[in-house]
Length: 287
Image 1 (cartoon, rainbow, N blue to C red):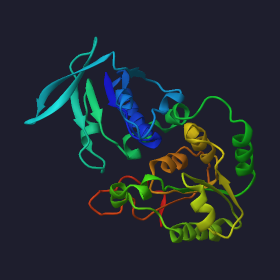
Image 2 (cartoon, rainbow, N blue to C red; image 1 turned 90 degrees about the vertical axis):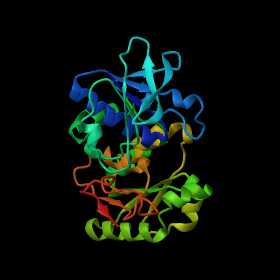
Image 3 (cartoon, rainbow, N blue to C red; image 1 turned 180 degrees about the vertical axis):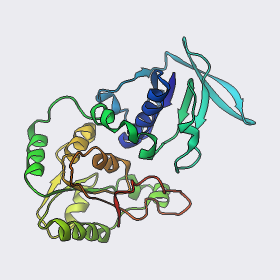
Image 4 (tube, helix red, strand yellow; image 1 turned 135 degrees about the vertical axis):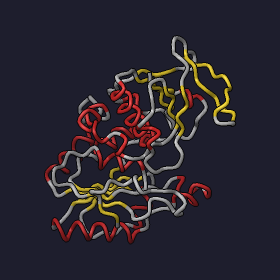
């Protein structure tokens, strides 16, 4: 059995699931998601349960924690009813790590695992498992139709706590208007007239600050409880300008557009101390 701790926003949860899913498949074992963090975690909701995942969920009633020592440090090692003891596999930095690829059965995974290298071989399965099964309707369906009939570009602007929280801003920073202009110019030079579809947690800022020279639709009809719907809509664009955000990373990765070009920021983090080597796929353009 592989157990993966799930936490963070939707994009983080998807990375944690995808990486654990690939490992469990390679080992021919079951996958269990530890979602107990969301009983006290207030910043984000548990969201990936809306997808047709190939896993089970661990509730608080199933889990107990006992302190054991790992490498001279006191960690909590998880046990659940009917499970064998689990070995803790904890991410050490953001670069690809062999410790996950080489993890054995009965491992408990803790980390962001933010690289497609952990799960690229399972892309066909993940395209199904990380996509809503119910059909899009209403405004979602209308925008998807517009995207299919135009040279559409999904543009994601991530602000929120990247702006409002000083500590978060020091780590992540934000992509400025110049980044979006350079990216759109690159796409227009290659594909001609574009139609832009802007997704953001701060649509008012986008309306006031983004003047990108192409017809623009601001996709702001869904609330935060419908982030899976926004992700599905985003994935239907032909091309992408992503923010330094796991949300739009997945919007671009889930796209099946044969000709897609993805523009990503040259710096994923504000400081160089975070190793971002493996976060952006090599086929994407760093701008």
